[in-house]
Image (cartoon, rainbow, N blue to C red; front, side, top):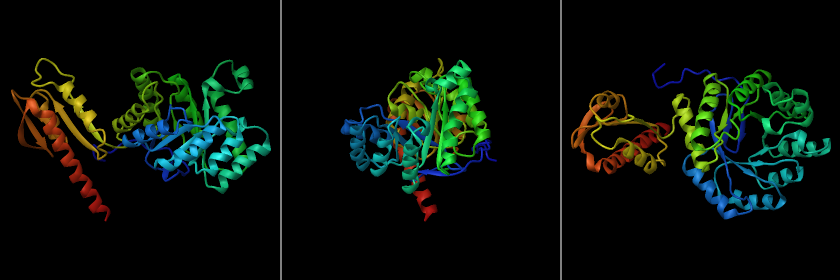
Amino acid sequence: MSHKDSPIRRRESTRIYVGNVPIGNGAPIAVQSMTNTRTTDVASTVAQIKSLERVGVDIVRVSIPTMDAAEAFKSIKQQVNVPLIADIHFDYRIALKVAEYGVDCLRINPGNIGNENRIRAVVDCARDKNIPIRIGVNSGSLEKDIQERYGEPTPQAIVESAMRHVDILDRFNFDQFKVSVKASDVFTAIEAYRLLAKQIKQPLHLGITEAGGARSGSIKSAIGLGMLLSEGIGDTLRVSLAADPTEEVKVGFDILKSLRIRSRGINFIACPTCSRQEFDVIGTVNELERRLEDIIIPMDVSIIGCVVNGPGEALASTMGVAGGHNKSGFYEDGIRVDRIDNDSMIDVLEEKIRSKANLLKNRIKTKEL
């Protein structure tokens, strides 16, 4: 195993497809997000989905609370490329309508959409159109009888709720589904996923629900999802933040990148800075991250402000700079090849990184041919 490989052994699961995105059975862990626009505002929703596509989202979930939203979904679906999941509660007719309009997955809990005939109608439609279902259980919305029996949303209570819905799909002989058991408490979520992972073979969608704002929510998600992923549990994920949805995608990929599970885009290695720094490291990294978020080719780029750690990190990176007085050493593929003026570093590095990314992309295409 090279130092770039992940030591994690993934949990074995069945395979489903959300549009053209494979989920489970060793497929790359998919990063999801959800729109927070009004779905009936087609232009705003499409614009947000396109912004999510630009930062690399694999799958986008859209809430469809009404028939008007279902009609809007028809137009939205025609204008975007990424697979779309419809988030539906209670009204089975909405599920049938978005299925007609080409939805790629239904997020619907079978037990919440009425009598047996209604459940059968949705399941038969999903089977006929080859649409998978996501069962999504949240600690904050457990069935009343489960809440009363357990007193609080314990991991066991959450899993019991999930298995209630799983049993319905099993009864209808429908196995194209994935399951999530989210909680806002990290330990509750972790234990619920561990329990569920032992009970079913279907893929698992990970999330710490209502995790919080950009900073605290990212930390909670990194800890909770990171622990599960390190145990091989999880086939898709969403980082739920009270923030711009594009931040959810960036954090999701950063979590996968730090566990060496999935590499996408630039991994910036940067020092926290001290009085030895010869240029503005923090400003340089922040600006390069902003400018280069469209780069999807995996690369390690080290930005170190002095010569104590700079050369060592640069030698192990695709590209790197080691801070020096007025000019900093520039390294590529483990070799020092140039010196860069500190005053023009950001522009020069952007150009060099883009050039390298294009070169690597062409190499990949050549290998594929």
